[in-house]
Structure formats: structure tokens, C-alpha cells
Amino acid sequence: MVFVKGYAMLKIGSSGWIEKDRPDCGPLDAICKPLALAVCTSDIHTLWEGAIGERHNMILGHEGCAEVVEVGSLVKDFKPGDRVLVPAITPDWNSLEAQAGYSMHSGGMLAGWKFSNFKDGVFAEFFHVNDADGNLAHLPKEINTVDACMLSDMVPTGFHGVELADVQFGDTVLVIGIGPVGLMAVAGANFRGASRIICVGTRKVCVEAAKGYGATDFISYKEGPISDQVMDMTGGKGVDKVIIAGGGVETFSEAVKALKPGGKIGNVNYLGSGNMIDIPRAEWGVGMGHKLITGGLMPGGRLRMEKLGALVAAGKLDLSPLSTHVFDGFEHIEEALFLMRDKPADLIKPVVKISD
Image (cartoon, rainbow, N blue to C red; front, side, top):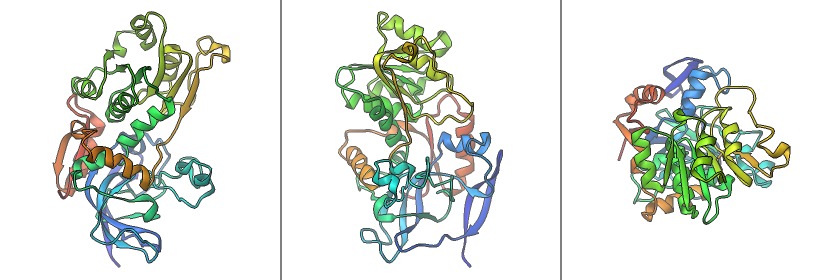
């Protein structure tokens, strides 16, 4: 029996190093060893808030890049030694949900999110990837392993917020929350041709990064309701689109109030607590204001990884501002996790580099 060391959620509020059986490789699958790993706020919600319920001895983590060490007999496009991008969402591509266009929900709502949800995550010496040909992507030589971690979740999730909000040329866009996902929403809205990008956030390191990605204006939620400030900034008109990448269940109320009739809200924020989302009746046009709210889990899979990787490899998207804290060595996973929980003022994203 071969054992694998990993950093796990022991139960809600408790974590530590454990050993588990090395995962088996199915005929369509791959076994990978990490080259670099990143901690996500979702790991914090899962471990300390119990947002997805109780889990016992479940290895955490869903962001990283890796080297393939084993492939199944039916895998065609990958072999041991290949360096790969690993998406946080790894759908079952033969599912009915994937055929319907919602691969991220293959097998049930959010079930395309397997790592540290339904199975062990990537914070381990070796981890399992289902449907290797459909989910892995070759790591372009132009991308270093630290930046590659941002392609697992931060880039595709932020960009998905832009897709959900349907940002168009010339739009005025409000981005609520400018952590790493929000910063990628800013970058995506800028790529889509937004003329004005108003950001909610005040941490200096995030504000400076947001300016680099195309933000034009900033709001502090500490200085009064977001919607009031947006209305003041837009002459009472509001914004065309809103991307929610931070806050809580109460944030939707401010988003609806700040949105023009006919506008769209794209939510990619993981709501770790609360029971009901607040939608204000009058500002939603008493139900008839044509203010569309859509929330979605990012698409996963190989094609999306290849396209986003090509964007970075071509020099069109600089991911280096996101990784503010880089640790050298697998043993620093716990330190990075606790840093993400505590969120010091100079933090955007912690990454653990294992290999260049």
C-alpha cells in the first residue's frame, strides 16, 4: 500500500496533515503531482465556516498546476512528465448536464466542482484528475508555475462574472469586491470594452492592481451605501452591468439598486453564509424592471484552460500582481492557508511553489 501525505480538513474548524491511500487511476484519468498550489477563499469558507457541510479527513485545495505521473489506458493526449494546467472544475464530459451546456453541474448542482468537495483536493503529494483528456491542458512554456495557479480558478471565475453580466463595448460596469476574482473581473470587463469600471474596495494593494487592470473609479462601502455612491457618480443613472465578486447575501440589494433597468448582474461570489438573498421590491421594478440576476460556477475543462492560457502566454494578461505572497516548499501549505484566512492588508493571493 502506498500512502500520500496531504493537508486536510479534519472537521469543521479543524485541519492538519494526514496520510491517505494513493488515489487509483481509472482508464480515462490521470494522477498528478503538484508543481505549485494556491489557497482560495473557498477553502476558508469550507474549513472554518462549514459552507458545504461537514467533511472529515478531506484533503483541501482546488488550485494548482502539476506534472502528470500516471495516465489511464484510454488517455490519448497526456503522458507522464507532461506539465499541465489543472482547472478547479473538472466536469464529467459525457454527462447529460454537459450536453445541455452546463458542464459545471455534471452529476448535480455544482458537482463539476469535485476537488475538496466530493473528493480529495490538490493539497497532496499526488492527486487524481477525472477525464484527463477533457480536463487537463498543457502548461505553455511561457507561463511560470506561480502564475499558472491563477488559471485554475481566479481567471476563469472572474471572466465568468463578465460573461454572466454580458459586458458590452462602452458599458459602465460596477465590480463589487476586488480580491483576486474581482481583479480578474476588472481585467475581463476591460477586455470586453467597458468604458468605465467602478470598483468597490479600499485595500491599497488591490486598488493599485485594479488600476493596472483597467479600473477607472473606486468606492468604499465604509462611506455609505454602494448604490447611493454609484448614483452620485453616474448622475442618477446607475450602471449597465454589475459583477459581484465579494460581499454577502446583503450585497444583492445594493447591486439591484445601482443597476439600470435592462441591466444585468453576474454573481461569481461564493456565498458562505446566510439563508436568503435580499432583492429590493421597488428597485427591482416591483418585479418588472428587466434587471436580470445570474449566478454561476465557472466553466472548467481543457478548452477553457487552453484559451485562457494562450491569453497569458501571449502577454495580454499579466497575472503577477495577484501572487503577493509566495512560499517555497510543500510544507508551507498550512502557513499559506492561515494567511488567506487572516487576510493581512498587503495580501491578494498566497501561492506555494514546489517546482519552477
